[in-house]
Image (cartoon, rainbow, N blue to C red; front, side, top):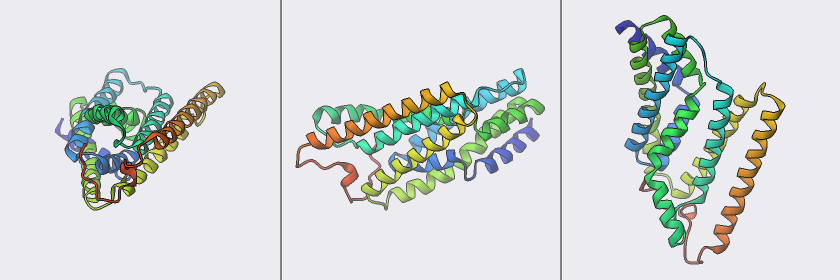
Length: 239
């Protein structure tokens, strides 16, 4: 078990370096408190790697990675639009934004869970579990991924204290859109025509609806109000 733990830790830690999940962790840390992000990632990673170990060690099969990549890509698209939306709106919208802020933990956890399903780190964990002690692989792979993402969270939290909110909001949104394109490309490569059409239709609806909603908010917002995305003061990481 100890050998499997150290082996899986090393493999997953190295595989995670420079991976999209590490970039996602840094992006989340730019916007939210680091300990909330790290806790959410730990829970999601523990669950994903438990699934990996179950499939790899006990069933010896894989999950539909393409579908999971598509769902994760759509989730990233929604999160990018949410980031552009901002939280400083009228009373009703501010109340909604506050409720959304309280669910950041679940938003981060669910997006990481979806993003990791079918990712190379999950496939590596499945492979390790098929040939090594499953419990050692589960613990080692989880610690390895959390350790790699913690490095990215530290960088994101440090940058978030010095960058203006305007830069953070727009930069984070751009990264989320990049993650969405990356995941959707992975999921749609080799997919059937029906899946491609359905996914692209969903993307058009999300982007069109999100853009119209953002324009509506800008038109109806009081002149005295300022959107956080237009505030040049350093981020307070208030979520």
